[in-house]
Image (cartoon, rainbow, N blue to C red; front, side):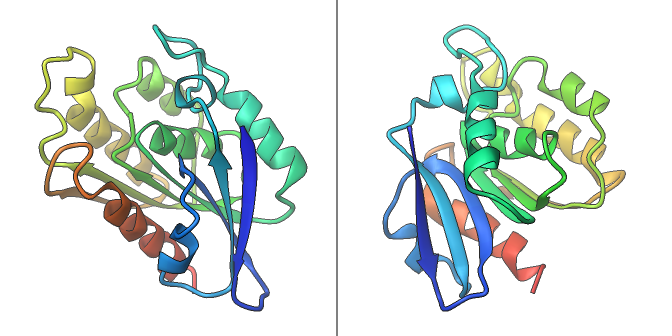
Length: 193
């Protein structure tokens, strides 16, 4: 796993961490200037984007978070992620109060134990964007088909002490993934200008 930093604008920079597949063009598509984008290259999602072990997921997300916080980030920052990356974005908020805003886009909020974990770790005074494809729960996988209910439950829990925006987008988990991620990034960055 390699942390990649890219810059847009002349600064001062706002740092945005994105838990998703590395895309060298993503920074140019973010509708905001003066960004330091930190992303991950050659990452094993099941290993480094999972918070604790379950089935084929080894639960080494804390290694990712520690590397990120210890080597690259000094001030407050923004975080976004897609799929397991969306799960990691929320999980990261429980590990540091440096996260100003978070976007969990099609987050794997079906992950076993997540709701209980978030219920015991208070997150407050943050700006949070949650979204899900309106067909994502249409699967035969018993655990993954709970994603809609679990996302709505997490939304209700977070709304108590945070500013939360939740929406359903058209399609399944893979439909327009990059556009949906950019929409979440736009929400968290625009609200902080």
